[in-house]
Length: 408
Length: 221
Image (cartoon, rainbow over all chains, first blue to last red; front, side, top):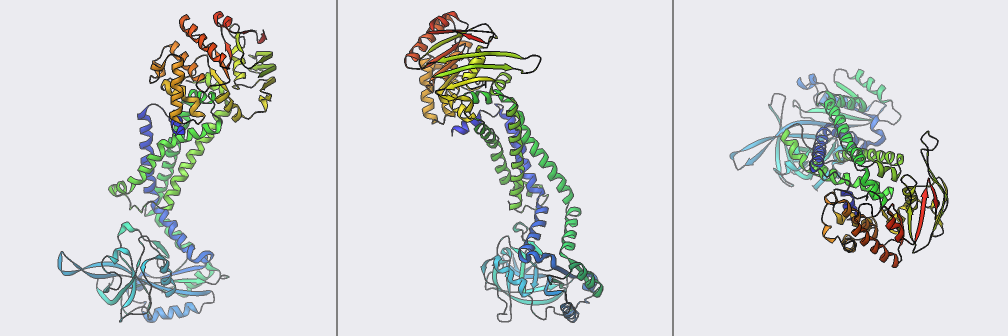
């Protein structure tokens, strides 16, 4: 407790000044949490993919059907199977993971209406290997692949589980591009995913669910044949190449071979496109600039305070030293005095961020994630280092006596 | 016991405005001594006191404290000496103007990691010794020069040091308070505390058992 008493001596006696610094740090924290979201989502997705495929991540090639093919239903079962056979025959390809996604309406009973209402759901069918990856993301239940009473076993996101829980059955109605009903599929819920689950698939390669988005997800193992004819499925493939295969050359060869059926991208192509999308469409460039400016303001706001305060409190420093304070403890006290302002302000900022960000409707708050914590810690650490350097330089230049003589 | 051997201190070394503050100063301070150091302004009295308090390093010579060469001590060890072995009264008091008298007096004890409650008790006792317990809650900037001087002395006494190094401790006191302070110094000295007092006041100098004079950085007894 003595440390707090002594550290308090190093704060300015002007409450307003310290209050303003606290408010500044509070808003910096909120803004940092706000602008880092797109960056963090991007890198979280990429790291999820790396977690599953490790060094082989660079040996992945993704296939998506062209919009033209989907619109004209050219990629029917027959074509898709033929495509799979031909791709599997390619020497460079080790495994081809199937995946497809559709928007499906799911009816549910509501107290507000006597008729069942319908809600739109993201229905994703994955190769058994990709579907099995969801095992580690389960909150309850299990992953099953064998149909139960002709119903397809599915695992669902927590929000979906509020409509249909484990053991319950429902009928998903897939809708086409013009919102027409194209197929019905009976499902039984066997498992519920975590709030913030991670999915590694083919269409988006990887994504982390955002609990605040309240989107409904249903996952199932892709049956064979995968596609009922003339439906609006969006098919995709994830090709894992052999370790010695040249990913770029294979991509080019596949693009040439199947130019009419869709596009092939390597992982780096995909993420480079995603990054561009994030920068241009999601305002990532602005966010980056803002983040940089906030970092500067934060660093110099806090660092500047430490330096100015150190200069203004030189007499207090020297009085403490004359009475037996040694340099390292002095430095700790100086840091502690700064922490007395910054820690409450940062914590309040982190608590208030979800409400303020939602209020500003600027972006969706994804919660305090490791990335945001690391970002704040880095800025904080930078400021602390800045203050240490400033204090050390200042101290080395002056003896105790000179400090005392030059004090306030 | 303290021994200074041929101490020299030069400010602004090798610059046109170079000043030699101390020239070959040798001094032995025995436990229980009551020493006055007198001399004109700028003669090196305060520099001598700062060197004794380990606030400054001499440019030449040896400072032996209880058989230990001070030059070999770490900065932390010197800080510990200032915190527990020495009591220091500075010429312009060295008090934190915006803080309470109590906190200022507690300071060496808080730095020495004594529990706040005990430190407070010891500080009040030191203020009582100086006859100013009623000032405990006042801010230093509300005090007169004489009151500040007594607060500074209370702070030097609070941790029961072995040696008190005082720079003009009666400079801001009237004759009545000077007499009171001298009686207190005598009492403390009888209890075993060694004093080295830098002063211009002949009453204080005469009161001490040893008198030293310093002129142009040269010390004589």
